[in-house]
Amino acid sequence: MRRPAIIPTALFVVALLLGACQQNTARSQPITIDDAWARPGFSGENSAVYLIIKNNQNIDDGATSVESDAANMTQLHLSKMTEDGTMLMEHQESVPLQAGSEVNFEPGGLHIMLMDLNQDLNPGDSISVTLHFENAASITFEAEVREQ
Image 1 (spheres, helix red, strand yellow):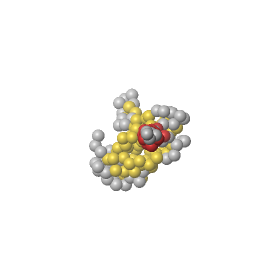
Image 2 (cartoon, one colour; image 1 turned 90 degrees about the horizontal axis):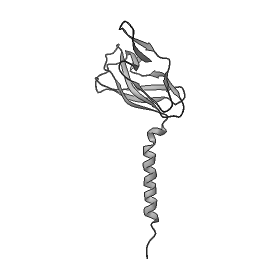
Image 3 (tube, helix red, strand yellow; image 1 turned 180 degrees about the vertical axis):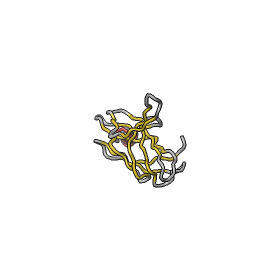
Image 4 (cartoon, one colour; image 1 turned 135 degrees about the vertical axis):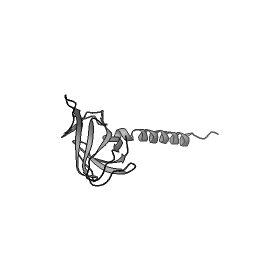
């Protein structure tokens, strides 16, 4: 007499469902932050944070402001080269995040400016940063301090 294969089949289905849940975790988050890092700096000076922001939503969003206890002032900035070869940094009121896209904050482009550091930022340290968005909830993440 053969026993029904209900238990092994049920276990297989549960394993498949759990695997699917784990794979969709990042996509189920409206906004995700990857590869966040900060430049070293001394107390009283400035530094910058770089990262990748992914908008996993089906709607456009935007990063509107930023804060960190590591500095007295934090802003969203864009570095631009002028016609005469001078590098300028412009404060950005908002950074657009189109639905399903990612935006790279990298040296020479978009970045989070940390002004008037409250502490030394040494390689290997980590700082907490909070990004605020137009639609999605705010995200607090850690940025590792490293030379790049």
